[in-house]
Image (cartoon, rainbow, N blue to C red; front, side):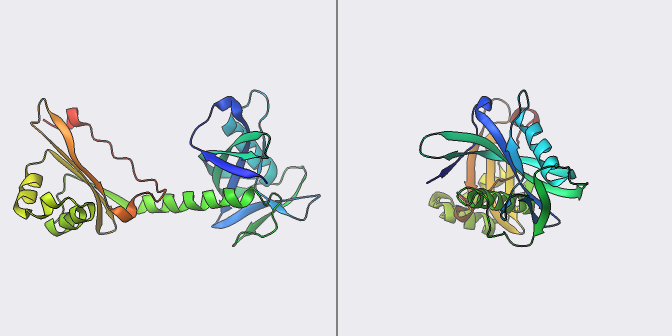
Length: 240
């Protein structure tokens, strides 16, 4: 039984192949091999002296004819056959233009509204597609998140956030909570539409002591495999 594992990073020399799960105009892109009745994602083995991104771009063109697209690294994955563990890089591509399909073992490229059920590698491909679906959802989620800098949220929103975290010292003394925010050096908040989902509060004397006092994310937004927008706060240059 083949086992699929996912990794954030691994030594580059261990990466032997690239697989590119792709979409075009919202539809899944799959290849049909001339000698098979099943479908597979574009991908292939890394050539000598080739970096893994070049491998992905080459394979994507050779097997789909894609000429205009965005390409993103998702993660390292491996499959273990009980004896050997082999490693590759999983990519996601959003294709906006196809050229002529190069002459190869690929018979045709097909676009699917729903994922096909005839897999060339049924023990591997569904796992990779599941990873990509989570990746796409995470991207969509991150695109909806708004960062507000130095805007103090309404006290009712703050109370809901602190109650969720179980920080009763704040919620039991609302006047103190208001004063704490009014006298903070920096406040950065995260919003999902109009809902406050996270807060960073910076305190200090503004000259020699500056640190993050509160950092909270609503419980239901934690441990979901989501990629939140990166918040960079330059404390030394932003605080006078």
